[in-house]
Length: 97
Image (tube, rainbow, N blue to C red):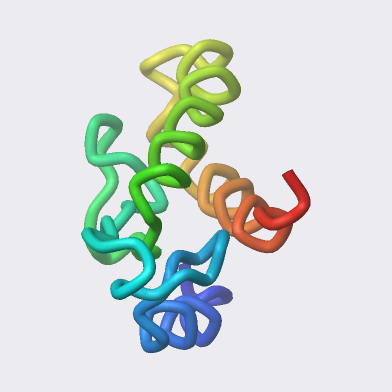
């Protein structure tokens, strides 16, 4: 999380979706997405990004198909750094999809 602290602070300061960059007026109800899902032990200290409803659902579906399906439950917690790296890479590439 430390290596992304500056980027996360900047993303969240703008109060826009980390993917489409729409603000709360353009897409009401931005969601704070935990970088490491709470369902596998993620905490606020792992970091959060703001997402519109559409991109939150898309990112979650991708996480389910790439992380939860292939990584055994007992190993998901130990993959924390990889999950954060993967999620941050998705925000970087979000506008290309």
